[in-house]
Image (tube, rainbow, N blue to C red; front, side, top):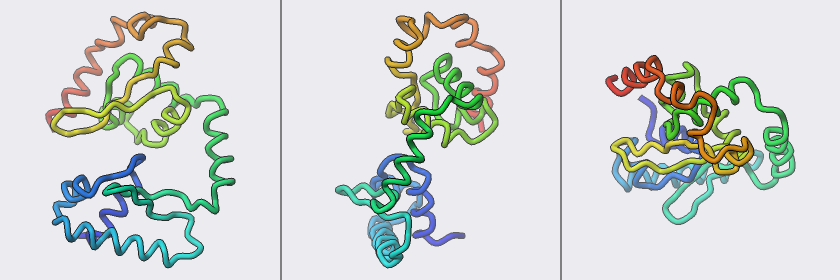
Length: 184
């Protein structure tokens, strides 16, 4: 089993938003003091790596792994290429699923598509085509919906006006796939 500090580093790496100490405590099944010690260890490690492209950012009780400010120029150019280039087939597929099935969680998207959707979701979020809505459900997973800008760009008044919305938003096969995910 991996050490607590390693687990926390992984959680911070995969999260696109700052993570609270209480969330880290919950998902690692550790005590608050243990989480704090692990975070201090990470901060020291990243601080000691003078050539590291990553650093641990702290805001109140929330932590996030971010790129080092000295790399801002190259990171900005890279992200700009994500924003200005054409959408890939997988990105369009993911966007269609969010439009017709939203609000939808990342695990639901991945169950439908059969692949990891993390980078695609990040790209669609950066472009302003989808947005994250916090969930009040038991899993507290964020749900993704299309933005008003996306709807306006398509020239429709709501997603329910999309072509074949009634048929595709209630597709039986997708319902079965999602139902099997909930049962697991």
